[in-house]
Length: 472
Ligand SMILES: Cc1cc2nc3c(=O)[nH]c(=O)nc-3n(C[C@H](O)[C@H](O)[C@H](O)COP(=O)(O)OP(=O)(O)OC[C@H]3O[C@@H](n4cnc5c(N)ncnc54)[C@H](O)[C@@H]3O)c2cc1C
Image (cartoon, rainbow, N blue to C red):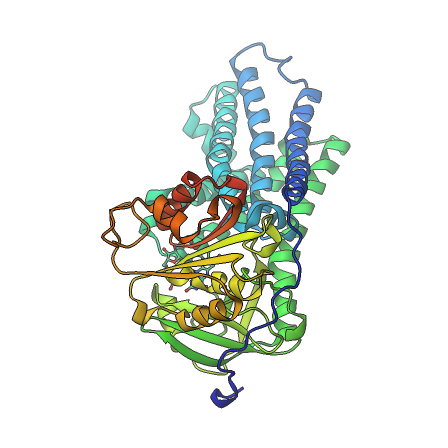
């Protein structure tokens, strides 16, 4: 596709109908209940294994108490660790009901419990061995290191410590995303190298065929899910689609739209509001995937992303050479019309949060007036996709409020309009039906939190507020 072939603005036909009503939410909650029941059953299975192996019965002194602590913490810690890995593997049957961001939040929450359980297992086992052998802890540790499976288990523990510590907020802020990501990949090594000692020395598993089968099945299930969804599907999809960067169009002083063309684009599964991980296949960028929302509803001709210059890689992407192959992973995300349950909709974007909001405005089923769009920008002269969003709103009869300029109060998500009105009052003036609408919000994290507060104050139930956080 050359520059001259690029359509000025190619809008897709909006969806003709949408299923609304609360039953959708009930169905999602039911699916979540099933997934959570399965997760709790795994935890329960670990407790049962512990009880079958004697539970607390054999505790007669300190070493046997330490043995019991070591066994239960290892069973629970490993089960939670495997669940944690599934949550971050971008698995459709999880992300479909929780969203990738929701799954990531739970993944993060499990980090500390897993660390505490595995640390307790490590220390309890070590002290138990030391007491039984009548040696000090360091000498015992040294002698255990001569047993190959236990050496691997200790390496696994150290790797896990590194992964969890580098994920704590203070450490994460000090690292680049890529450095953090690479350290995080060692979590897979950590899980793998711990397996031999579970099978050979874990008394709840070793020598017990049923328990061994359950344990191996659990590991295999997680491994196959990660392999299939994180590796095989993305590689196959990228190979089939053969996407290349066909055009880049400057949208504002710090954003550029990238048009990707390739094969089988009519069969693209993405819907408005979703995002992909993109890898530009250049020598320096191929290993650095970044998430970007589609910024035009899929039209069978190209995929478009609008990228703000927010860091080292996104700066590079403003000028990436045409013809560069691009590998994609996705689509992901629940920031879509599928989550809509109301007739009225309010779409609120700030800055580079505009791409998914623009595609939703383009494709959602609506009559004139059903959708209100609020676009918060620093400067109306230099806001990305503003002309497009104006065109969509004018063609479809949607009220559009472009809110530009510096903010009012420090905690305000709106500009200083001189009225002194609180944000919630201004929101209800712009979108009078906000309390009975589905509200979609996309923008920086702190700004989004502030918008959600106003929307809640205006009376919108939490289930009807949908936000896409541009955060990791
Ligand atoms: C679901 C989602 C959709 C997004 N859609 C868009 C979009 O349509 N347009 C757009 O311009 N931006 C979008 N972003 C943000 C975009 O991914 C980041 O700005 C980009 O990855 C920054 O990369 P960098 O190397 O230039 O910045 P860095 O300097 O490395 O980081 C700047 C900030 O970007 C975030 N970040 C960096 N790398 C990643 C990564 N691989 N995954 C997640 N976050 C990362 C971190 O919060 C970091 O603090 C989206 C983010 C998410 C999570």
